Image 1 (cartoon, rainbow, N blue to C red):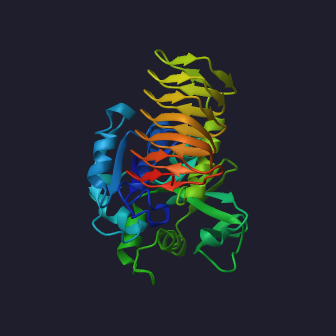
Image 2 (spheres, rainbow, N blue to C red):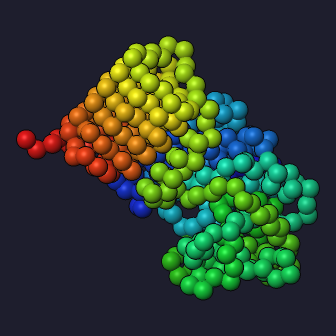
Length: 352
């Protein structure tokens, strides 16, 4: 069995962070989003992984490497234009061959892993399998229409949903899907839709298995989604202070992770939170639900429920909340209660 991870797309809903980088490399709890699906595939015993890339392909290649660091082997597959998920599957056919495969959308975060889903599909004769999750408002998703406990069809972003069961971004397929995709026509938005592929299998009488999950799942398409996923991942992390980290005259409460070589002086840390390797914090109140990237420098800053990416410097901010701050950002002063959305290399200085 092989894995196929989609890491193309423009990430327009996550701007300004995607103006200068791939949305799949934006970090949650100091871990790039793309790491989560890759790790779950490897955990399920799938080590031959194709990664579909677009305009940011070179950046993703450099960040991910060839796969040994994950216990896998990566094959990068260019998709010059974002023509749909089913189109990505079609162009990956030379890599996938005749093997069954797991398709994982690279900007999705699913807690609990996919081991059970993969094992169930391996032991079935289904042509495909999907994971369903109840959601409060399914209108933004592909939605399952069920009949007698079986999947009847998938309705894409319906105004009147047939159920509250969203199809999440993890699928399993066998080779029959390629014949269906070959006969597909683009949707009104000009894409080959994976929902149409699943419906084509069903119309041909091919069984499509469904698994229900109650685990946390989110499509990290917007800043609010990233911050919520950051909370969930931080809640799952045990506190750990790595070798070489230094805490001086500081208070620690809750699960706090501090990377190697980080220095924390005169601070109050309220977990869950993570501080990256080589970061330096002076006179700060951090947390809860904060991820500080590697080599950041914070001085006299209070911050909660926020993500600060690598190499950023922030000073004299009495209260930052619900914020995302990109890489190599400089902030010198901000009003209390500031909610910052700053892309990479931004500069902010308080008016005198």
